[in-house]
Image 1 (cartoon, rainbow, N blue to C red):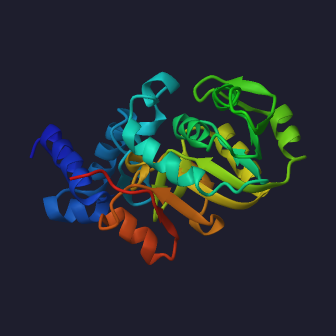
Image 2: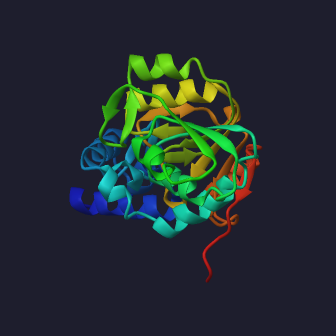
Length: 256
């Protein structure tokens, strides 16, 4: 089998099974495991998979720039946002992460909601300017343009003064094996800090993030109160989460 054919097979297997175990594929094809690992390195360098110990997982499509991500799974993000907005109680303090799904949450908050929203997202803050009864606190710091959020020492210091009831966390990957991941180490650190400042953390997981992985770990799955997703409950990736005891909040699936 030519190298190009083997790599095409690896990508097909990744789409079919949601993961690749290098030693199993090597045995199946009768090639050395080093050859498969080399193929996976090349595919990962091209952005076609996410390498993990022993193999590879699907790469998240949510790691593009902010403008590109606004066009990914927009209907799914709105469904997740509506379900997540329902978790926000009147009179509470909400920590709302950045990203395109968090922006949809801001838009989905009821017009009569009396609550405080703390965010490090400039787009989320701007979306709440016209909300009549939501008080908005913006955490300042260096603007990370990829996601339109503030990061760095100033943002972390500001976040450390906050105590919130709920944190709605945005990630780019949710996988039973790798946990909650994102594409930048500074963003991952900021998300961990925000999670520490809230009594409960729920994950905003539109369908393209379920079963995918990114390079940097945000939190293990046992650190969150639940995953809000519209991915169908009978998909393998969701079933794997449920098998681990991870609470899944059903945001509704698209009509067949």
